[in-house]
Image (cartoon, rainbow, N blue to C red; front, side, top):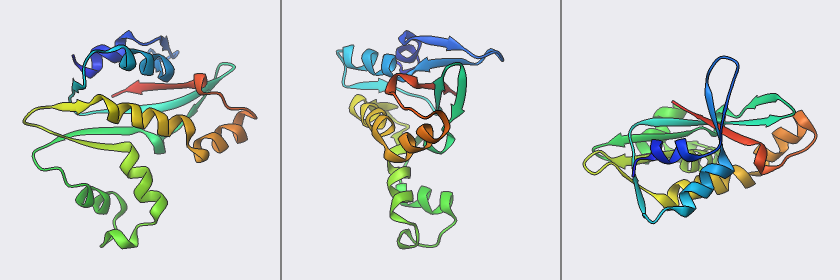
Length: 151
């Protein structure tokens, strides 16, 4: 099954500009209901938002970037993303954030393990920095306020 087909099964909302948003908890439910271990993917970005009382808060630094590649190389990606010369120069929290929010998939098969998507959702839902940001803006945090768009 294709990732985009699973996403479209999740609860959907629409922003005034016509952009479609999908509830992360609904996406998780759809993933957990699948009888498959992998999904067919294309290059895409899942950008998370927190919505509370009609207000939308963008969580761009936590977007999930899924890239097809012939040769996965997280180190090369990390150094290009950060502009650093060595991985040791990159702060641990940035390495961790990028490991959670960046996935390389072999172009030859285009298959993404389902567990890796669930790992990202777990990370986003429980990450202290996300919770803290949302609480500062809205005074509260609940995982059902997490939504995402697909690019």
